Image (tube, rainbow over all chains, first blue to last red; front, side, top):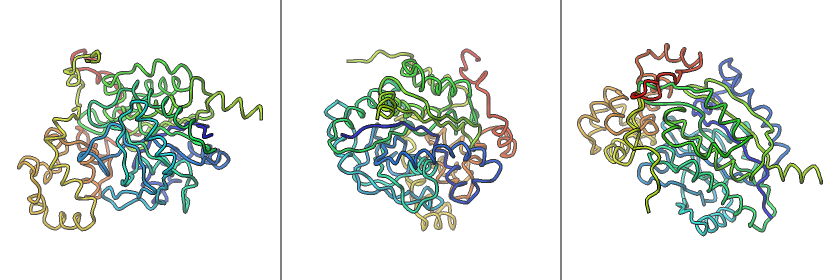
Length: 288
Length: 134
């Protein structure tokens, strides 16, 4: 049986990808960011996930505005890094897991999530920057990836609560997949940032840290944060944080926090990163 | 069935210095977006750099949108329906960092903006609501 063994969240700032690709990770400005991911890179090598369900948003690279799906699941065998105007990132092609993706597509629609299914799409920095942060510079990504793109750009986005419910349904769907797979779920984007207008540059550490506390503690309150509250408190692009709720909900009721990192800034953005393990998985491991 | 509305949608216009991108704006910006998306092809970036005005005329954008592209006036482009996620294809083509493009929408210079970010960014105090002034 497939199991969700851990949840990981991280910001997916494009400038982090650019610093990574141009060998600037040890520059003083960027070192403070990349040092925050040393722990997780070692941990991932030991965890060896088979598949990552990677919640991210497309930044008008593959979908919007021709189509604006609320939830779009990547069904393809592979996903090529997109050219976002400066050439594609020099990172490996992302390999999909078509059997698990097909199972998710079936189960999630049966559970009344009206997904859009993407049989052909490129993936942008939203998907590839988290992979670089978790796995470093590699010739091939060490696991399969099922990209799940969420509309966090065009109002109304799905609500935080809807994202939570999707996370719960993903957990059930993974657990009903017969093959024995070690599956992780990642939530990406955020934390507070605003990339438009005179209010650009907004950062709200108080909101961000309360959000991180909620993820590892009592997450119930996070479900109630409205879209308007995200926009006011965490900036117009901070609403990407709803994707972290998909990750959190897929881990079940109780979680153990393994790692946390928070740093301001990377370019325009507050960088947040957290690694969580479902309590049952933690227990099962110590019993084994 | 109507889900309970937790706040009037007009509250989305109550956030200082912020334009909320919605379906109506997306429609207004559709051809501007097509132009920006075309810059994902190296040959198109080249053609745009060579003859910006002629390249823009290939798209069904409004004259105002074309003008704002030529002026690299990102606040204006957002007024005219744009969204930063496709507008950065334009600033990327110019070789600008996203931070530079974003800073151009504030009253600061790029250096002043970068310094503000290094010092922790813009505080949300007084930036949450026009009505409440908080």
